[in-house]
Length: 199
Image (cartoon, rainbow, N blue to C red):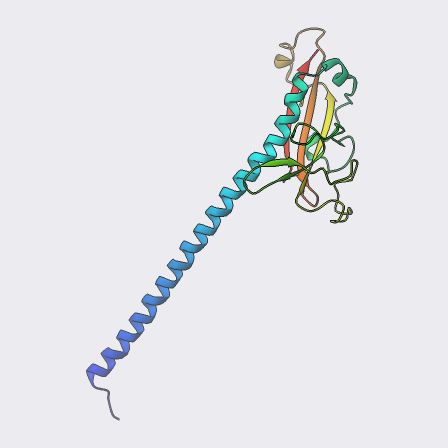
């Protein structure tokens, strides 16, 4: 049987080492590219999240200037299920009934949040359009966010007896809830904000 000279066997192992090194380098390059893609996505998501949060806070800021007695009159009994956990687009949540004003994100029910975080009212969506999967994209495009509101009697959650003692006698607290989401979102993807007012 003929054996290979030592130099030939060394040459073969050198090629194998180069292939292994190139494979490791390729994996590292793919990992670096994936990391950059994830970081870019996180930055974009953060800008959009900031815009969605602004939708909720802008609506509440308008309420600080409004009559709280009128708002309290709209309050319903708090549902048995915690309000943010209720299905999107279902009662007692309602689409924001305020008339949309161009340039004012504190009014209206439909909005677009640009990748830069800029928020603008979606004035092309007809008022009262349900924000559900059944609504065609031609009526409610997928990039449109919907804002729902809910006013409940009492505080967001029941208080312990010790904490309940801190609420002044005769006080009438009510909670104003807002949430923003796109059609086909789950309740977990919706952004929810609550504000307590006391009469």
